Length: 380
Ligand SMILES: Cc1cc2nc3c(=O)[nH]c(=O)nc-3n(C[C@H](O)[C@H](O)[C@H](O)COP(=O)(O)OP(=O)(O)OC[C@H]3O[C@@H](n4cnc5c(N)ncnc54)[C@H](O)[C@@H]3O)c2cc1C
Image (cartoon, rainbow, N blue to C red; front, side):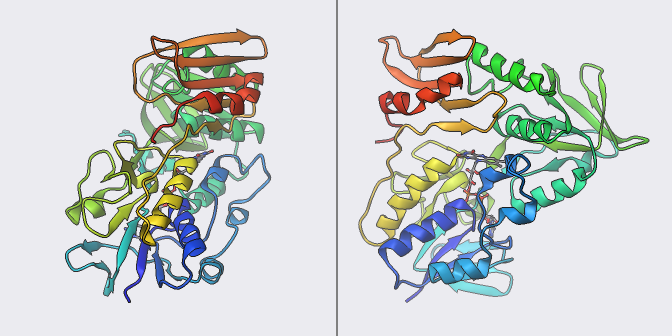
């Protein structure tokens, strides 16, 4: 019998393998990954300094340990170059593997800001453990880090680096950090909270070039400011990895398009995690992956099961100003705020006053469970 093949050993690939093995220990399972396929929790990358972990300590199991735990064959360091959905075969170098079912858990690529300057290629992007190890090596014994992007990942890195004693500057064209997730007043609290621990904001502008300087790097901003840095870390967003699927003729939109059962436009080929666009939604977070893995494991073992997304709050790891956000789906409505010195509770409501999403800042994050219970599911 041809194996179930999973491409990708991130949280999506491994969560699915675990869920599958809870239901079926017999079907042969192969996981291919172009990285070393150790298991690690990616969210730890942006609070590793605070939790006292080196890059090497973040991986909690090697590929060999995972293979033994899951009763699976793991082919690490193997990049899949092509998929032939008609023949149910995939190709990696000289190797061709037939599958009974294929699962794409390919993740997303960090977006690169086009930059001028003779050191533009030294800008770092961290979306996996290997890149994080390189970043940690680059800042070892150094002080000045410039961050491009004040979204969720940029703010988390800013907090972690500042707490560890780095001098952090954050650049973003938006007027506030986390501006896509939070209403203005809530975003301002985050800005002030991080500023209080030393983060310097350069908002409403953008980086134009990164060049070599006498000591380290120089970042020139559109507003004329020049910043000195030992390292520049870019976190301006992610784009689902769709190329492999696109070449295989699968339907692509923002991500690899799947239906509610996580099936792509090809028979016996499924997708989940950061690479997938499930029923129109790309949600690059852990909780949707766990929901998707549970549903897909059932589907792959013979019980067709659509994925259900309950309200899934995202905890932003900025201890300097704690934030929990349950982003409203793109429906019309408005934010209603209750605030005092200790925090902000913001509810996103439609015209009839129905709660669609929320954002909590500071002490109000204690209301996470209560509000999550009141918030409607994202997909039922
Ligand atoms: C710094 C940081 C902090 C985060 N914090 C949080 C948080 O607090 N809460 C939260 O909910 N989410 C958080 N996220 C998001 C969350 O980590 C991701 O949604 C999740 O890890 C994505 O998992 P994935 O398996 O879909 O993708 P990935 O982890 O990117 O895995 C993709 C896998 O596919 C492999 N691959 C890709 N192409 C090929 C190919 N052609 N052949 C073979 N292998 C291939 C890769 O090697 C990799 O193993 C954070 C993300 C980052 C970067």
